[in-house]
Length: 234
Image (cartoon, rainbow, N blue to C red; front, side, top):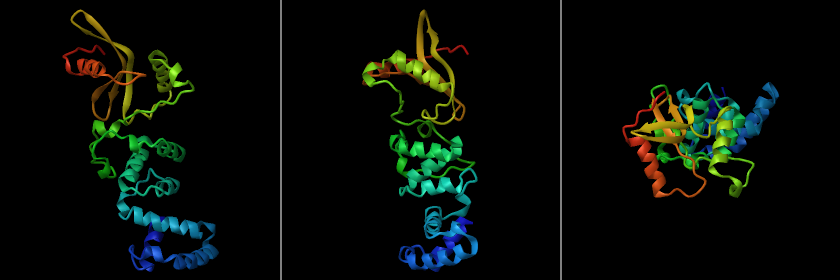
């Protein structure tokens, strides 16, 4: 209904290119509709409805998972790819409006790891997600400790306690397989800090925790886990 009211406003204002000059018309409509149907048709709400139509001009792209409050929050985002990203996150993770606001506040879009972030489309049932769609870079972990007091062991313990509840910061579709997970190669035993399985991608994700700048040897350590023919006993 709000989308159709927005469409009618745009048409009455002479189309999207002229719509920004039609505030007087919205004021007149607001007075009339408010007197007939109540405060939901205030001048401010009608402006939201107009903006709603302009931001989401294709009606079948609207999703039932998002409420009007979700959409009102998203309307503050001018960049279409960024807006599409947060819309997709609501759909994928069933985010409440409060969780959506927190995600936007954390600048999750700015921390995306995939290269083509300026061309994000709204997902549908046929969309195929990739690992770049799943993981933010960097991942932000908020603790009540000062960074100088936080070592890798403490960070590890904190993340495990957080994972027992919900760890959306990591991304979409992750399940924890184990922490300090042991893998063997010949006579050597290695411990992976965190081993995840992603149900969307049907693949394992290896995570090593560092509280310092990443060094080349750290990359080599990850490559050793990922690329060698290592048997993982599940």
